[in-house]
Length: 304
Image 1 (cartoon, one colour):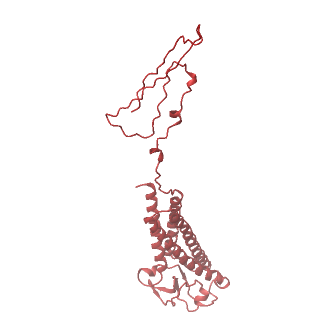
Image 2: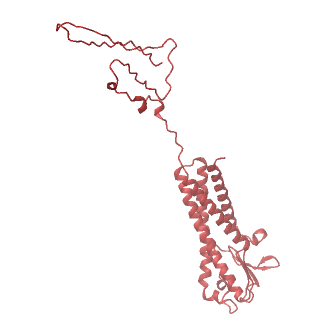
Image 3: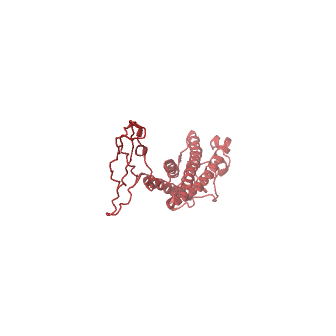
């Protein structure tokens, strides 16, 4: 398996895991029975808060009293159930003062955290679709889209996790300040921060894939179909540097590709070339030619 394929499948694994955990995180709290009853955001001792149960758990869509290992006396379900003891149970003197004086802090942190979680899910699905398209054809646009959507999804998921953690960690501190028991829901916070970790891996892998992307191109090299000569092969020696009676052999240019072999009967020879040169000397009579010499070049075999 090549390096790019390995990174791609790691990226897909992280993305599928993050998508599964996000769906489960959003569905947690839809039912207060069975396995889902253990997926809550916050649990605290609320005895004395008007008509509140002695122990209360806050889920995604409602809050419920916790008695004997079962959820009871649950509120009506609503989307983005806010965490605000003042709104949930009414004002009480036994309630930590921060819930009375800083009511908007807890109210909006919990509701905005839920909104960021839904936005993260939306971009997560777009990222998953772009990765599936990349399985069919991996191009520069799909690589860029996957990378951009991965980082946007990571931003909103991290923002949601920080808002939820900040809201309920502050509430735990407020309850402990009045010697009341309180704790974060380990399963919900484990799911959301695991999702953040998976999305970090997905964003890094998508960035590496996009950064190392090179389009596969197969370019036809025309030099293999031409008889272009190199500079060293096409250079011709200067004839003036040799004496007149010396044979100068000119290097035969060799093509870059192998030419088709001629027929066995087609051995060609260069036509005999005879170069006549007349040297005359002045004799006793002006019109008399004293000596005449003929120089012939050697017959050179032609290139097969």
